[in-house]
Image (cartoon, rainbow, N blue to C red; front, side):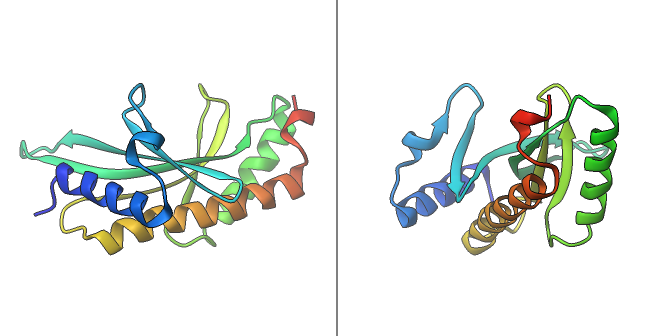
Length: 149
């Protein structure tokens, strides 16, 4: 059984491998860790919910902003179409929006039950890789986000 404390050990181990400390990338305000890969910033945190049978499921969730949402409705719809088309191409990663944040995000998540360190590292690394690719694709296709709004 993988616990939240074990996931924190995984974070520590990944930090040691990449040459940083968990404290240097931890945000107390967000209760999350921020890793970088290329142009991507990956936020890693845990989220839990109670199931219908009153057990708790906990997930490691990874989010990376890949593109600012355009103010123009037509450009926004084009971005959404591109995102839906790309959702079938990037294994283990989905594109999602958070309108209140104003961004499209690359998202990956996994239930911690049975998760080992290799699976944790792969989850974070894969999201970082794909987010770095996706932000480049979207900026190439739609231009600089500064020019959108």
